[in-house]
Image 1 (cartoon, rainbow, N blue to C red):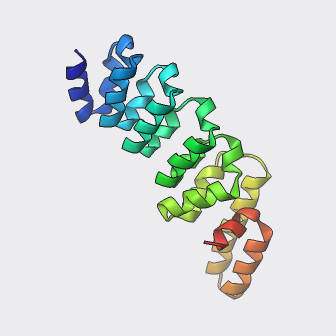
Image 2 (image 1 turned 60 degrees about the horizontal axis):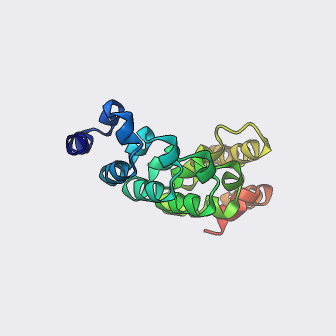
Image 3 (image 1 turned 60 degrees about the vertical axis):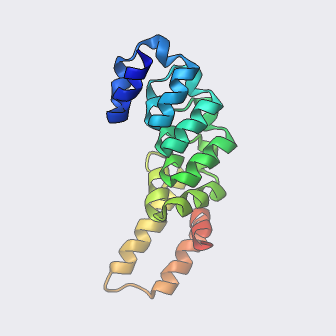
Length: 173
């Protein structure tokens, strides 16, 4: 019974794992489910995880539902911007092209007010040079700032910003 299922997910969205596949593939049912709790997108059919209407509805309810969208929509600028503007931590689930985009990083950081945590979360799983640069700049800055022999904070700040394009964006905030 779809009504009973919706009632169950109001209390615990993971109850969706017990919902029949036919309902999890139903546009009408999943439209209602994601409005109740966006994280129910996790249990939607792959077709519905790629449906823009379902995805936008889920992200309105809970921006972190972005982690369950299709790979195609993780690369979609409008979808990524919508998610990142509501919860900056969602950018870590976006396609690489957006995690490397300074404007998108800035948007994400502004939406949650935790710039260092957002940038670290975005790059923490990366093994490329961008991750190393961010890690060096942010954590090196923090260590130098706390060190008794540290240079002036202004000097450290300028050096950090000059050394990394991502920190240049952050400095513009």
